[in-house]
Length: 119
Length: 133
Image 1: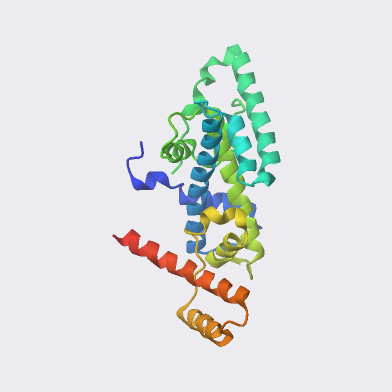
Image 2: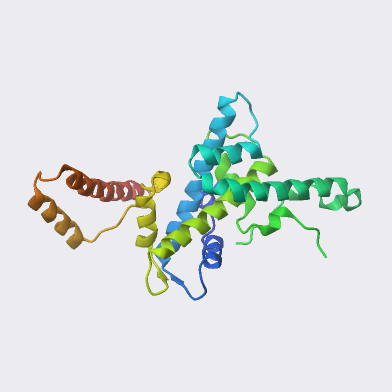
């Protein structure tokens, strides 16, 4: 599990990059605002996770699915994310199935777990 | 050149998101599909929060208070209120208290609103005290 406490926070630099990309060029962001947004993002991960696991529990299932995450959005009243997330989910599934059917590119399989930490 | 991968459009490290998800007591395993979606929606969330906070800012400068303002005004962000309290200066606090005293019990609504701000501030200092332990 998490060995250091920092492991439970999302990397500040990456969150800042997302923030900068969503704002017009040349916007300055205070240090406190950056750490605040990173903290908020980390807490959001847990918030969504617990909403999704609640759905799993209520349905008396065990494994968490992508659909549970999508359904959780409505439960926590983040309906505005349902559409963009649904689109991303469809794309993800398409790419995932294309990867499976493309038997020539077996080397790519099992890649989803190994993601480079760029921090 | 490289095969298109859905994970490529993500910024946040999946491994870190997974660690955070697994720190939740009810989560045993996290498959690639829910992991991708939680990561994706967290990025949507950061973008959304930053954009809304930016609307409160001036002179192209985004500060903590602009984010805290969004958090305090949107009930769906209630889960962030403890970690993102509105910060006020001592002078503002005194003014607030003076205003409250002057108003007396003229209007219940407004006085309860300011006491809410007071408790928000108090909970933050309480938290800091805990953190220092």
